[in-house]
Image (cartoon, rainbow, N blue to C red; front, side, top):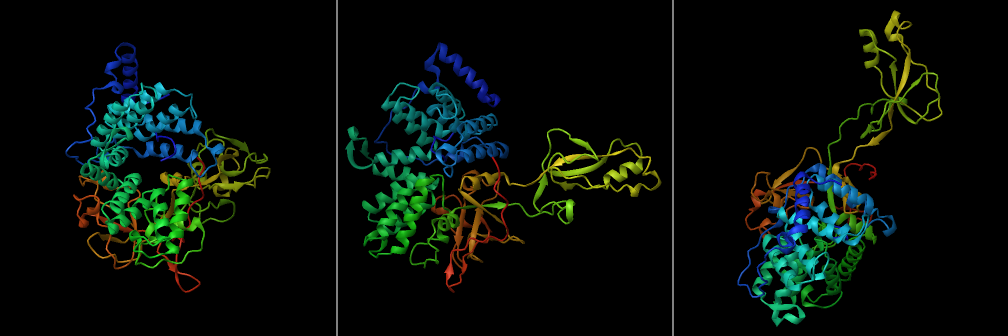
Length: 543
């Protein structure tokens, strides 16, 4: 997610809700979700039950997510601050929210909160959150706690802030679980300093946050395992997983530890690992949206040997980030043709908003593909001639070549006159999630043919990046199936055990798909980090 608290038209349910909220605000503020009755924050609660927000968040359609990702792309950390277009992002996120995209609505609230791309309007930000709260979105309750803490659009009230965070954590918000887990992970109470001694519940909250891939929760859990429990083996593993989840704090601590003689890292100095964690920390500082699910491709934990690295940060980042699988290559109509009729493989003709037709003796007005047509079609042989024509590419200012009408035989001279119709330029087809490449948080690959699958309880049959998922009708599919559920696994090794984070999912229920991208022997004769994919990726899209 971006620096904003990632989140005019709304879906019918949200639009109606906003009108209701506005009317309520004029007559009875106590009925608004911002003023809802809350159970008082209890730092000494006896237990905590882990819930996942993915289980309760509203479903997101592909169309809505495509709009959301476009908004993320134009505000990407890969852009310089003055290049980020928050006004355009606001339009994309409004459209996505119209289609029910709760993350887009959260981002939109963040824009109104900060006044980026839209006029600053904290009341509008609060109304958006209230709409999401009505839909049961845990993150909205977490954010409402922050608004109460900071007095954003509501009266500042720390007690209500903690009550909202407690409710959000119980609903499944990983951010609230990470925050309260830290606050409760103390040896004694000090309310004035904002911490309490309830370590048993704190650990349960942090474990739940880690199971939801929350990097902050991973960092807090790893710290307490290292400093309090002295469980160095598990702490090292959680720190490493935290780097995969995008925690620059985890990357920083591991960089420091591998550079010193500390129990966490086996009291052994390993400058090579220290340097790589440092580079990833710097990359996460520049782009906090980065995640490194394939970290083990470039930086496996010891005793595994490190693959050779060219010293470029970009190599580490690109090899460790998530992969987006491109659709199978299908022959492009016209790709086998030569000359003017050739259309590059993987490209399609861009549809035109209006029809442009010119006479055969005209100078070509626009570069692109033109199709010879008859001014009117009356007879079957004229229709047959039209159906046989193919688009031809001309550059602006060229002269059209003579059109061959001989296939109409004796009717060629009496058929209607010929004209040229503009079809536009050929553009590269883009997969819906390709905007994540523009954000700098993913790279593309193609699934090798024929595809290679393996069940999670079996040894890995081939080295490379693997993507795991459970079947769609599995009760925990929404929780487990994520686009970054990937891992770099060596041949003969075990696949990641889902029960480390999801005890209800057995290894045999996960099917892993091989995405290739294995490291290869370099020019030095040693195993080196390899970025080469099976197929070239498409050009970067415009957003």
